[in-house]
Image (cartoon, rainbow over all chains, first blue to last red; front, side):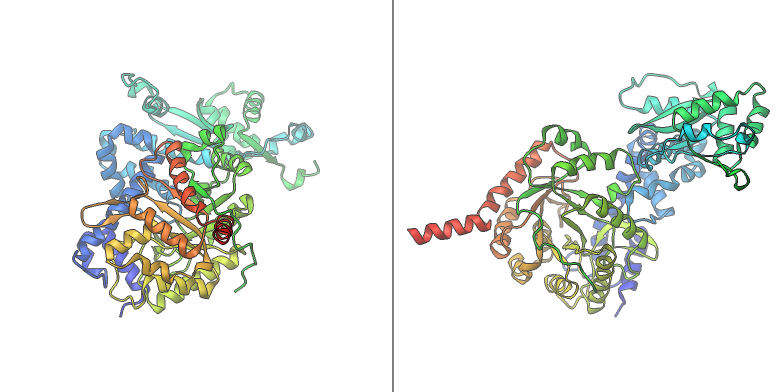
Length: 263
Length: 293
């Protein structure tokens, strides 16, 4: 007699590998072979995953077509098993998978479009941003401003691509005319993806801006982050930067190191 | 095991509909007279944003039921703590009248299959399911409802009938039952049992909610697609169920090829008409009427 765990492990193995159908222990035939019965579940399971991935990656599906997307979704699901009871999380590693898939040689921008779509999904469902208190910021003595460390809003993401992925994504939205052309050689783009109200928007950033935001997001203080930005753009204005990204809510909170924490 | 006492019938026995994203705006704008609404818990596991905001607005106007598809109550590995934490946060925020998941499994060895997979009905599986439900109810500090699923295969190892297994789960854990009449019908056709036998065996006092949905056929089996109207035989079986358990909150579920909100409300209206025959007040009225005659 097989244990419950053996039955479940055998069922899962057979579901993902039809050749292993015999490993699924103890399915009664009752007029339909166990392999065919398992096939009913296989159809449902892969359809669930296809739908979940299509919901996270509508632009990728539009770019490669439904048929190829379905095949890609199947291959992804076999390689990257779902780790959550929330099927909406299944697409987490899809862009990584696409970047190493042979399709990336023909459509080198596809993985970045996938990355953008996952950023959009994450921003859409992220925690509500807490607005940075300008009053509190104003109380920081000027000589300590360089030591400030900022936190980025949970509903914002940064993304750089060698391709104009924001344009590619935009023409994939059904409201746009399909005869629009994107010049793939037009150069890369640095993007800020963020939720504004309940809608997610993308906007292009300069290399210095995204460098500074990335440095802040990875824990550098304001002076260090500014040094990175200034090495890219000698005339970079830290005041204007602070103004722009505090007002749009991307810089959501700040801390001072313990030594300066009298504020 | 400690399950906090709750009102045994927190929802009025009216018809409700499963609310899906494309219908939020229309529902909020038109506010149709529907008894209650049910949503899939996992669709609201995000930390913020529009889905939770809309659900909050919906909750201001309608009683709510949270229906899960991902707890995997039948997993030999036990249930995910992270999943329970997310579910509890959601339940605390929305205070649903009912909270449910399925008599099935969906994960093994850390791999999720994200489907409602059938269990072998063995003594071992009974212990596993009861232990998982007990853990869920303890953690959530409330009763959960457990729903019977459609199945397309049976295990040779099964030593119990599904209806006896389900009844025993309710007796041992104190959980409520969500009786899916369409699933009973689909499994009865697929496995060749009498659906009335199933209904006769269900402990009526544990049934808190009923589900109705459409199914499809793939030529060999009936498949629980939730993709069309409730079929004639399922409406008949629904009447049989109500004659045994009494009027219960009844949900119209529709997930694939989602129709207009009006179509869902129309199906809910049909359920209301049948429910009206079994509401206590209606029954008392007809009893008085019979005495006077």
